[in-house]
Length: 202
View 1 (cartoon, rainbow, N blue to C red):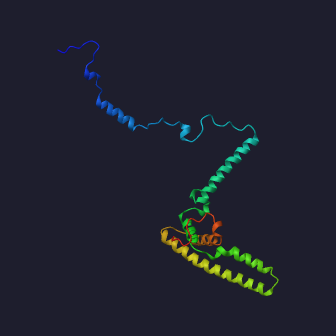
View 2 (cartoon, rainbow, N blue to C red):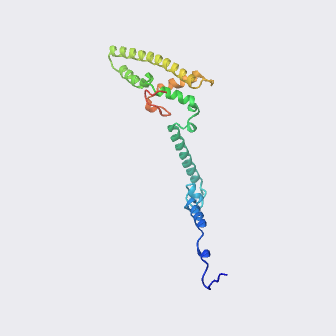
View 3 (cartoon, one colour):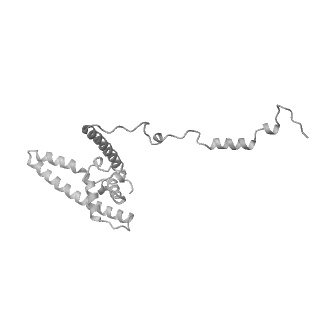
């Protein structure tokens, strides 16, 4: 029989349980190590009650205009980035994006329309018959070039669309006109902005 002196504990009782220590360490190590964020912190809002409702009609209109301006700004930024959910209906969809990329990847004669139109306008005001005759000839020749370039562009758009989306039913005339009208704009003024470089393979 083993005698136990008063005031002393058995060594087995005082020794820590190694398994318990390891389990506790693993639980602490596997925890998040930080307190759970509040709901307003997770949602990015400041603590406190919501702002009070407007007291006057003028204040209500002001808040409404601010909200509309913020919404329009976000939609405009998304449209500039080419976000399909913020684009107008006529610009949405992968087929329309393919048409835009096809136009933006090449140099189009229609992009020089404003430059040639300005030269022709200046030539009309020159009081020299020969200059005015050359201006009319230049204007007519440029229109022929635009027509020929538009025909080539239309064929390329049709070929690209049929290659990429062969199983869909396309309104090809509308797609070609969409691409040709985009090609007559200056590249930096196009909307949505070009997402491919000149000469890129589409």
